Structures are given as structure tokens and as C-alpha cells.
Amino acid sequence: MSRQSGQPFKPFDLTGKDFVGFEPTLSDWSVRSIPVSANDPAEPNIAAFEVVSGKGEAGPIRLLTRLVHGYNMPMCMKIKGYTVETWGNLKPETGNLSQKEKTSLTQVSGFSPQVSCVPCQLWRVTSSSGETSIWVTTMIRAGDFAPTFDDVRSMAFPRVDVPDDPRWIPRGFSWSDLRHPSVSLRQWVRARWNASRTDLLTFLRLRQPAWASEELLTYLTRSVNPDITGENAGDVRKVVVAAHTEMLEALQRWRAARTKML
Image 1 (tube, rainbow, N blue to C red):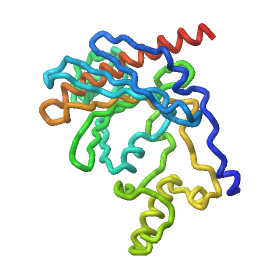
Image 2 (image 1 turned 135 degrees about the vertical axis):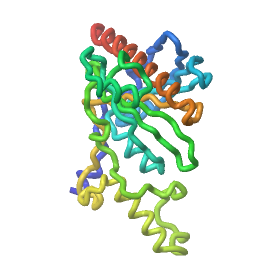
Image 3 (image 1 turned 180 degrees about the vertical axis):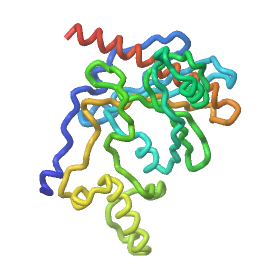
Image 4 (image 1 turned 45 degrees about the vertical axis):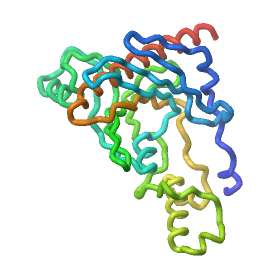
């Protein structure tokens, strides 16, 4: 069982190499591709893009869009020491929203009730030093990039109770660890327990850890700057959701065109 759990993860069918030549053109944004690791076929990160908009009362807004094999974004950030708070969900406009739903949609997103968007979850992510950003996530199918209503929190990732110490880097056992053996052991156990998804057999190296999904992709867009405040939150939130929606449409068109070619 230990030998079986130590085997490498299976390579993904969809990798960063598949996105060579993808250069989306958006109406109000400039887009720049950001390289991701293409050497490891089991690398969950697929593609990343920097998106810059000059619109908004807050001035130029810089965003980061990523496409990753399905993973649990909130838990990923929590293990890095960030605070993640949900700002609610947005659903596509159906034309038959109740007044209560319209009021809720406006309060959560800052949009009018007639907004058109893909299904998405909104998050407020705050670093340990206090910088706040807005994140938008949508789970999409790997086959055609069609959006789903799956919750990003249902994806596999180390489920943590206490974040790892950001100052601690695992380097194996050394003489320096004997200076504070209890602290070193506690940090080691915490990191191993988090990485095992709080699963005992995985912790004991008797089961291979759950890995990112092959069938579902985590599609996310996050604000990079400006820092989110009470004054600019609504304006930035609109821009992030709009870019999130238009970039996904570009990805879907590209995916459909490539499927026809194959």
C-alpha cells in the first residue's frame, strides 16, 4: 500500500501545451498570457492571463485569470494563511427572478437585476498583512468549458484546521531541529496532516492523496490591484465579474474551434 501511494499522479489530458496560440481579444481589456509550468504532465495549472482594464471609478484595474484542474480554492488560500470569505453566488439571468432574488443579487454583486453572467461564486480574500482582493470562481467542464453549478469547495485539496506556518519550509531532518524539538515536530505534523487532506491513511502514506479533477476545471478571476476598500469594492466587483464572463466566452469559442479541428 505504501509503494502504491508513492506512485506519481497520472498525467492530465489537458495541459498548458494545449493553449499554445490562444490569444484572446476582449472588448475593454488588454490580455497577456502568463507562462505556467509545462514540464510536468501532472501539473494542475493549465493557463494564466493578466487582464488590465482602464474602466472603473477606481482607475485602471489589473486582474489575473487562471484555469486549473478542479481544486478547492478557498482551502488552498487558507493553507497559505489567507482569510477567505464568501460574498455569495451569481446565477445567469432567467428573466423570472422574484423581487427577493433581485434584491439579493443587487446587494451581493452591485449589479442591476438585469445583469447577465455565468454561474459564479464571489469571494473576499485577505492576506495576513491586510491586503484584500476579490475572487470569482466557476467550475467548468473540461470537455467543452461549459459552466456548471458545482461548488468550488467540493473539490479536493488539503483540508486544514490550522494554516501552515508561512515561515517554515520543509527541508527534512537537521541538527537545527533539535534546538526546539517540540516546535519542529508540531510544524512537521501540521504540514503532513494538512497535505493528507486530514485523512489518516494518507497521513500514514498508505493511500495516495486526492488530486485535482480531470473532468472539472476551476476557472477563476481575481483582482490584483487596486486593494479593495469599502469605496471601490462595488466598482471593482463589476469589472471582475464582467472580465470573468467575457474571458470564459473566449475560452469556449477557442475550445469549440479546436474540437472541430481534431
